[in-house]
Image (cartoon, rainbow, N blue to C red; front, side):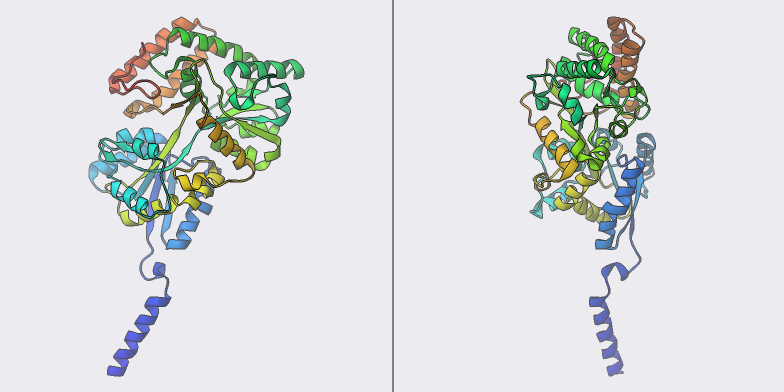
Amino acid sequence: MRVTTLMAVVIAAILAFTVPAAQTGPAVEITFTSTQFSPVHETEWARDTLFRAFETETGIRVRFVSELAGPYMDRLQAEARVGRGSIDLTGTLHGDFPILVPAGVARDMASVQADLARRGDRTFFPDLVRISQVGGIQAYVPWMQATYLIVAHKRAMAYFPRGSNPMAMTYDDLLEWGDAIKAATGTRRIGFPAGPGGLFGRFLHGYIYPSFTGSQVKRFKSPEAVEMWRYLRRLGGVLHPSSFLYSFMHEPLLLGEVWVAWDHTARLLPALRDRPDDFVVLPSPAGPRGRSFLSVIVGLTIPKTAPNAEAAARLIEFLTRPRTQVLTVQGVAFFPTVREAAGAVPTGGMKLLAEAVTAQQGARDARVALLPVGLGVRTGEFVPLYVDTFREISVLGKPIEEVLAAQARKLEELYRAMNAVCPPPDPAITPCRPD
């Protein structure tokens, strides 16, 4: 009996050191929901490349679910209300957290953030950590960030205004550029994603409005805004007529329909990945009040009702490693949140994007804008309000001042009803209202 017992102990010891940890018990699967990686090619990349590496390393399976903003928020809040959940980890835009925190969805991530800091291999950008503190807690761990840029065919550069610097382009330069291309080719070659699912609304409220007025909301109907809308009418004369059909600008760029396009970095990447030698990447233009651009910040949080919080924390550790962050920027053009990854030099089209992002963020006239927060269930009304204003003024030709006055009343009602704060670069006034 003593020999049998001893053999059993030896066999158990051998198994303990030879069988991978992932096979010693029931396989763990975590559910990760997000409003990001929604295009099919991004979802496939996340499942086949990003999470596959984590699964191989840890034995923890990842069930990734990309959702539209409405159902995404509804599901998280419903699980918080009943106190029982199925979501282990979630990742979404900074602007969603002022809703998730008071709804009791997000737990305080301070201990997770501190554990990551103690590792010593990643330094989160301080501004991102500061912004991630919402409602008195560390609402999320900064995961990735993105912005919007201009990509141009090299053939278009022959028509760029003489004496101007493309890396310091102004809105006047953009209009003159489009006019020169039109005069030389007889076609309009500047394009925006103003079709269904396109992000043209982000250009209106986060780029051109602050660049002309210094504001997203408060100066909505100001004299500077009137001048901006007059400019947009002139710009319409050089826009490709299919801009109102475009959702993603990489396709018309690759087809050669459009020579100069503005869009989200992730939506420009396929063109740069396919033919990096054909294109240049430029910062967004500057207006009379600076070079405004949106910094889109995506954060990770573990819901209070998460059934596998420890496994979710392991996935956060994996996603914020510098080498994983470089993998992410190469895969979907979301840029790092840790300094060690930002120093890595990508290649090909990604190198072009990285250089333009750096030039935009480091410009002397840079003006950072953030997405609106605090609008709650009415968040989805903000961007359409700007797009509707564009349609009425630039497409239907209605009087600018009359349209701005009417739309400003809707904007004021929205902010007053939700008691929401002005989004930067506006001053932090609650509730925000157009002057």
